[in-house]
Length: 449
Image 1 (cartoon, helix red, strand yellow):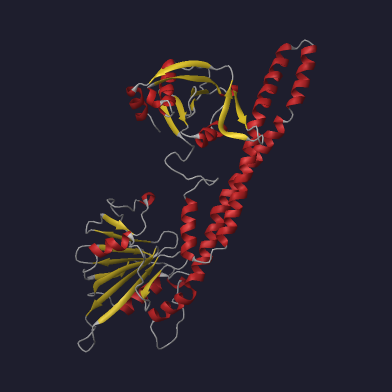
Image 2: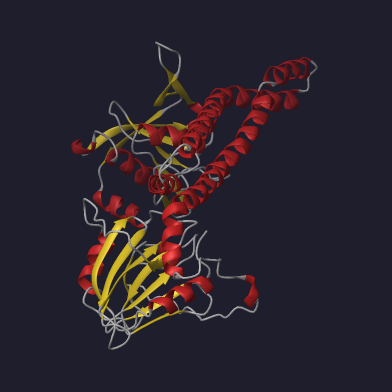
């Protein structure tokens, strides 16, 4: 477990760090920072003091205390340690205090503040100037505004109303609490942080698997409805024979829609099942990792991915690019994977599909609007994007296919019968000749969302 606020106060009371100079700074791991402090003794008879101060941001084992551990250097200097060397090394500690019971320690030097936040879920070391303008952070967090150039919000010194809730853990008489803590965490700290990280892994991957399970339920329910398509046709035939033409036409339309959608739906179900299997295997793999630092790094990488293991970026809500132009939405896939993702998850039957004829390139979709035909200007804009994201770009012009998504059939391999990623066969397609228009491309870039 991490140090509580009373234990942090005891650590600081024992060490009496005011007046000491920061002589060295080493970041021995992603979450471990060591300061070597040097200064005069507490009285005239005391020898000069040399203290190694450890700051650990390890989940489940956040702490700061004096240590006898060696200043182990990494093979490659880490960013924050290099920053501390250029800014904090050589500075004297004028004041060091915990801000109320917040488990935030503020170190004041001649020119800087150093805030050490010992929260398991948001631990950090942040260095600011005297106006609290952030100069650098051990862990950069844009969501919290903890990046260079931002102003650190004030940390009010809250004082506990339930003073007796937290207590200093028992430690042997005759020794200091710092010595006890250093030994205790050296023996048990890795195990504690490992348990916490494994809990985080279960929660992170479990949430992703849960979301995919719900999606799979919806897809299977939809598949069950589609599999009744033959019943719709039989009923439509009966209505037609009895002269109820309008009702029969409605049922035939539903039958056609079900038949055209069942193939893509089955592929989506297979993909979702595969994603769930991959996440379950990934969770098993993470739970076998015995090194907390390795597991922490793997979790950070995993948390930056979507439910199906796809890296999240600026367009986290979908693959490819999106543009909003005069009330119309245009989606662009830039490779086979993005083309397939957009086709399966974002495109609908009445949307317009575009692709350069005879050249490899991205799919472009114009989202359908109820009761509206696709304006020529929007089609020309989308066509320029299709040309730009294709192998025909250097030609400056090309012919394009365009048709509605409901007239696309996904291509299957002759060898194994599986769907070929990002390949389709269009029907009822029309042709549009496009010449690259740089101004249109610039205007479209301004409309990117």
